[in-house]
Length: 267
Image 1: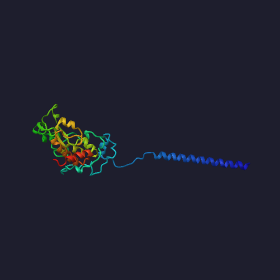
Image 2: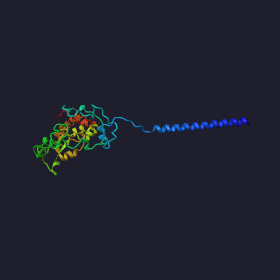
Image 3: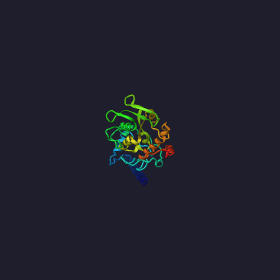
Image 4: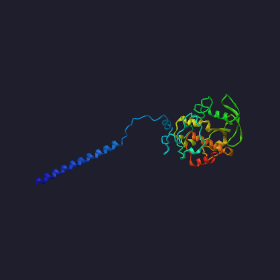
């Protein structure tokens, strides 16, 4: 009888020790799991000024699949480059358009700034007036810069438009971005820094004085979505789009490239 009681006591003690050990193991597992989920600070280089500028405008999430390596669509040529852009659409990269997320006109800098590394830049006259003076005839100016009046033979409509500077009249002639800024954004420009964005927004190659209503009708449409109503200028218009997209290594969609190839070599 004494032996039985002694054995029962030993068994009971062993069970208690085993239970205590199990509790300790469970506690350790829970503690380790908690530590694993704790964020660990990482010290590294600060984000680049370009990405900080974009992120600061609420564009932290880039469209999936939009990363573009240097030298392909989306990587502009060196700023201030003098090479003549190719009018050959075969060199253009075909790719789906990126998201419009993050696009705003302000991303391209102050509108018509003279502080830009393009032809006519830093000449003490803003880009809009530089283009008006280039494309209009019989031009008069107020101060050697601001175009006060002139005549435009509109390439988009073939109409002759008298320009008169004024609150209610200036919009009759507008300066169009041949490759619309919104289109450049979804074609690769969303990856660029501010100097490159300012360049395409003020590059004379990408600008043309045109009929205001025609420009508004075009909006941000690509070559497969809109062509000038003047048939005689359609080829030249498409050729300029190709040159701009080649210069800045912007991508095109398949339908867009098909239109460009159709007009290639005709002008």
